[in-house]
Length: 331
Image (tube, rainbow, N blue to C red; front, side, top):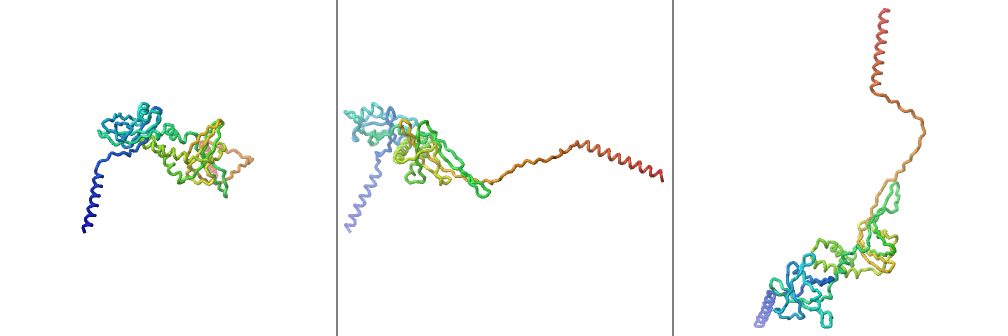
């Protein structure tokens, strides 16, 4: 019995210690951080504090005395998000060693007079502006137009069936050659890629730069992993949907151009196939020339006809009266 109570006491103590630990406020160190490298500086996006102003400081140790920290005010990016930054001066002061090599530092965040535990900053993980521009220009690097055309019609009985299908037409540049690769959806390897492409196309409605950067990073990585190694030649600048494609099927269309100087540009498009069949009754119209002599109809004014009729009636009455008179005299 004593052993049982002893075991219960130990469990109770452990539970109490866990409860106490859970109730102690902890300064988060696992910030959601993304870094963007621009021409002049690095912008540090922290998802949980972008909505309000804050201060930040850099040190080479995560155990630095907080009272010695030199805090800098956050700035706003083009979308109005509050971000930390590393300009040329801060980079030379904190992120370079004596030999000019890159080193990591710790960033402390101060907000509402509270200093949180530091987060390690590695500037080499930054996404460049070139990558952001590359992703934002996806589907526009190689200009195309989307069209539909009627294929050769077939006749069944007295019905003529025409099939309309879709295609992509490349706005060809003089001297360039083009190749392509089609990937039919759904495809497990492309599920997230297609989702991200749709989300990125809606960026103008989303001012949360942190989320945008996360998606751009992921899309860029998938783009390079999925880029084909085998290509088919484009004929007459036109990429037609597969001959057996059904209406509404979706495809990822990879396109690559190569200039006479050897410069290559790759791009990706998203195509929905079209297949419309229309039936038309086939009727043949025969036109014959008939050479017959016909008399033109004579037409009169209706008033003239009435006058003539009236005159005839009057004459008839007069004749009848004259005849009656003669007959009466004879009698």
